[in-house]
Image (cartoon, rainbow, N blue to C red; front, side, top):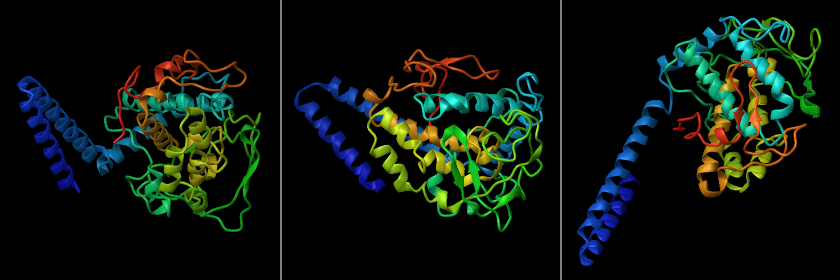
Length: 361
């Protein structure tokens, strides 16, 4: 297929060159050749970046999880009066998601807010914990048949940790997030992770949306426990390549695209419930599982691809509200607590504009 592509490019080049010679405009021919060389260079750069970062190397994956562990050890900045359970900088990140959850889901700011949130997380790993590699994302379409066999969940030293230990005979988990009660069926794990870099990680916050809650029940009190997971093959089956094609190919407006993403068994929810466990099943506290940020990297990647398919109409768009606000506008300010100053919707609309300069490969 590559040879055919190259042949067609060469034929096109010669045809254009002949036309330019016939019209007697050597400058037009030379300008076209320069443009072709630039395109060839662009393809080379993108291919090189994809080969280097498309799948992180073993040491890069280890460096990444070490940076996450660093955040999980650094002291928190958020006030104990606001978040009594906070003990680490990682807890600052989780608490921000807890505070903002009523406004950033099933609303007009879902995609924009989470884009900047994952960017802040990346910045913290770099500026506070010395990470220098690419920010990974979890491509669900490569692991939907059984995530436990993927590098994400295989429990090796360079993974994101294992599934939880299997606990037989469990009931499902009744979740109440966003006023949308549902029972998440028990799956393939349910207990503490058994291996990998987060074996000894202590989850301090939550639950906020299922039992057993502690203290005020809002997820902000101190509740130290292991990280548990319950990888679900049922929800993983909702993240197939055909599901991604349906999302990107069948929703021409931002409102339709975002709404399809957040349907009950859509890609966003199914990614979270594939991880499962505690805090993975909690709509407010799910940011407490480090895989959250890889999942939302993929969410942002899907949005980025969708935007690029029709850039003239898919940038600079807003819709809906962020309860209890009036209609969302491009000047609406997104809130990030102690992590960062507010950002306007306009400033986070493109990954190569505003504060951003990144692409997905």
